[in-house]
Image (cartoon, rainbow, N blue to C red; front, side):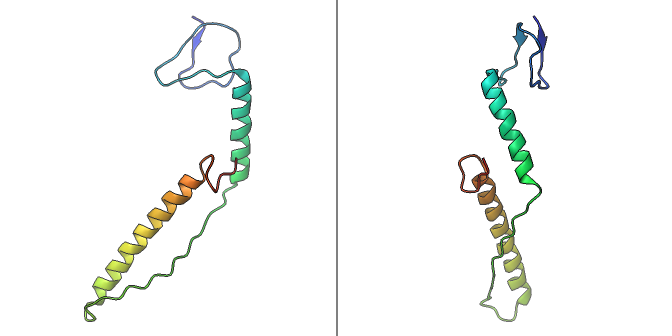
Length: 102
């Protein structure tokens, strides 16, 4: 056996028999080159940009005397909106998504 590379290796120095763990894979040299180029381009284009989404929010309580309930409701709703927007943006940034840079 020539080696083990469970921690990762991007180039095999010589032909030989290698031990793989479950879930690991071997790709041909062309696919490896394509993957390295894709990752390099992805790292270069992601340059720390951020996305800002503003959602105006107005919460009105049926009980006009309980202002703290309205504030709590507004904060809860704002948190739900933020997490859903983050989930959607993250999914759309994946390959094939509307925000994919690949």
